[in-house]
Image 1: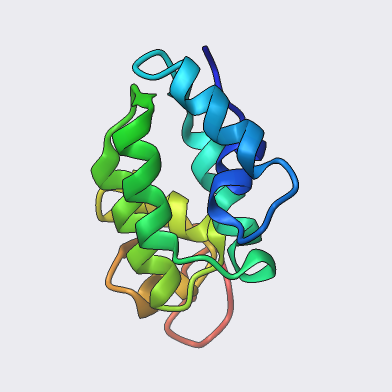
Image 2: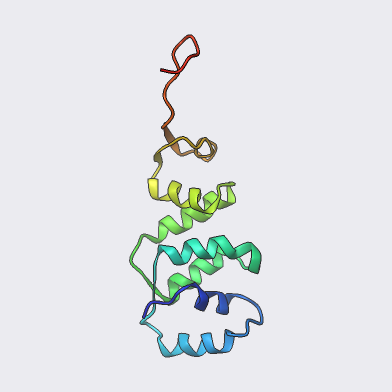
Length: 128
């Protein structure tokens, strides 16, 4: 059973009106729940609005649902968020495994080896 982010938010938010129902469904479908990378992307995007601990949320979801991807990618993306990348760039950086082709200089700031998308400049300062 695929569980979208609404289930996890109902469980993570304090006093959510769907919290009791979410807990019932969590129990009912125990061992059958699945999530995708989209679940974690959405959780990262809404974490500040709902004030929950991102790392705790990731760990909880991974313990309660099947995820076919590499959990290390999600934890690495969380670290990149802490380092200042936005959610999408954090996941791009984590999925890149250390080297990325991009024009975004933000990757340089977090230790990802960026292959510049922008054209190299000539020695006289003009672009080729």
